[in-house]
Length: 197
Image 1: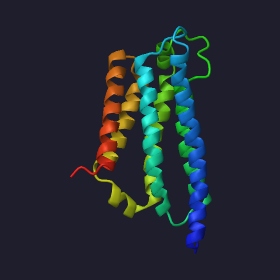
Image 2: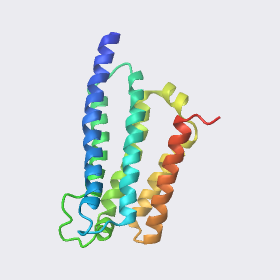
Image 3: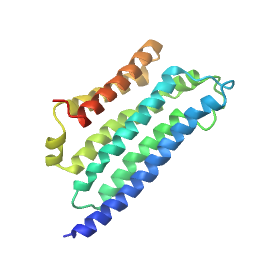
């Protein structure tokens, strides 16, 4: 049985890997978004792509705040630690897909976005599956204390919409989708953390 001090030290160790990877993810996104300001005459941004960047930034901030609840996990093993590393690595991959180091042969971010949408929405959709596992690791008591019927519906709906987005080239659909995701995420965060009575 781990002592309280050992549990704290273990969680601090886990927090470190979370901070490193999510910090790199946020840095990558912010740097890419600032490039649009620094080089306004180069390739112009596509508002749908740029809004997805903002959405993923919001998602990471939400995730990082929520992971403070990992402190209630009393025992850690390597499998759980490895899973968490695997899970949060997907956020970095998503950021790297959204903001490529070089557009290369692509003429615009619009062209890039639609050429890489299978990867972008595949990774995003898979992150909602990983979120279920992450929640399971925290235990049933945690789930019942923090979540209600909305959580599984949210994740399943988001996953289904990501699958549709993989196969859709309809620009109107993608524009509406990012607006729905963004507004819903803001609403979800507000209702989770501001305790509307």
